[in-house]
Image (tube, rainbow, N blue to C red; front, side):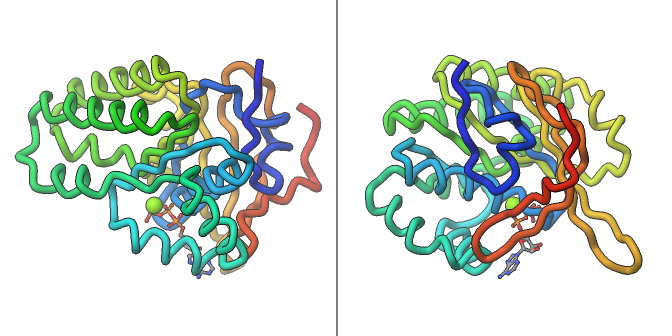
Length: 242
Ligand SMILES: Nc1ncnc2c1ncn2[C@@H]1O[C@H](COP(=O)(O)OP(=O)(O)OP(=O)(O)O)[C@@H](O)[C@H]1O
Ligand SMILES: [Mg+2]
């Protein structure tokens, strides 16, 4: 089994080497926990090594994303510019995002169209890695939980067929992780990583946990992380054995 290194400091230790190639991994967490930064850093780090990645930004414009990323991780500017220029990192999704916003909602065909479009872009670009930020857009397209669940199945099936490794972000504010673990639409993903924020002694602490990762062992520890100018850093010094 081939492992795709995330290149994020500490995360590959947690993942016992990386993400098994072909896995579809959900990155969930509350607002501002770093889901977008982590996913984009993953693509930048891999693009530097020649693995082509595509970032579907379904939430904001490409310019704003770039600005935010480089303001949070200014040390990665040179790498970022290089991979954009080389074409190993592609930022996409703006038209899709605008259209989804203008859509009427509650139309399964809209969801099918969206997935077909993502799929066509991935195929045309020949991308090996994919980020979809975020899946919340799918819930905007329907009020029906059954339609939403079906769209998650169709999406993971499509990504599997394309043979890509992907990170899919989702906003989850639920404090209770066990509720999250048992949400049925999450069973279909190969991996589930959760970013938490909690207050300890009036200080906000960010922590990361790998809940599952098919095809590989991983740490069961919940470890603190920071968003630093040189990228995300997970403190693994107190990590136990797998
Ligand atoms: N210039 C900066 N310097 C340091 N940290 C920053 C900077 N800009 C952003 N951050 C950190 O990055 C976090 C935002 O990260 P990100 O946008 O990836 O979160 P998110 O989980 O995707 O949020 P959302 O749910 O709103 O999409 C901020 O909460 C802050 O901690
Ligand atoms: Mg985000």
